[in-house]
Image (cartoon, rainbow, N blue to C red; front, side, top):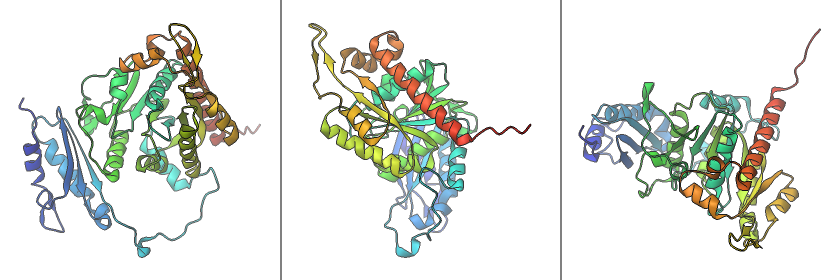
Length: 378
């Protein structure tokens, strides 16, 4: 089969017209961020914000035109728009739900987004380099070790690492209805933008393009029945975090931090962001908590120690545990065989398993509260 080329995709998109402007979307300069990998195509259609809702048929027509090409397996197109809101655009004030509650319409829309997923747990950090992705992967595998049906979504559009950490090679298959089948590794369903682009290809996408792509990775994937979906968020508190909090039925968030003050400062920002959007914080994990020399067995607290536990106590959230800085954790993650599956009886794996138990207990307890009391009339 002849490989799908950029010229072929662009030619197909030239057949799609903007109905109001009377020209094709390529000539109008509306196409950006085109990515092609092994038959999987992704691109953005830039539109004026005021016309965004009206151009959904154009987006669908663009996907259909490219999907008709020989060799096109999956096609993801997102509408993007950026502008400063004008005073007349501001919505009228609406009655606000009480703290910790969501408006009924908002909660309903979120539930419909992932109807087969029982719980969604976000793993976040205020800054990069604290081992968040390693934690997310081992947490997902530890939840699966409890017999749960687990998926993991790599929400870091700009720096996807889940494919490497899970040792997944290849590309997703297309499911019926132009949906995407998730990849599987160690009994866990997984999805990442990294399956659609080369590992060293930078994603030069603006915020709306990244959030649009993320939403399609959530909704266009045939996740199947899952007890829990773990979402590895990018570092910081940006567009993707806000979109996840506003549009996805998050059951809670886990914050990962190293013990030193500068990391805890950023972790505090992340925690407060989730609180502002009424997402429960399930707890804080102290990663790289200490280092034990493999030769002399002497313990060193390279990044200080205990800061995350003190911060959790100060903020009134659970402290889930401390994970050491250890070469075995790093090597197994880099090698695609995370320590929870490669050495499940090791002390480090036991820590992740204990954290997973606490997270799942918190999620199920919250779900039980949301369901309300069981009233029996005799």
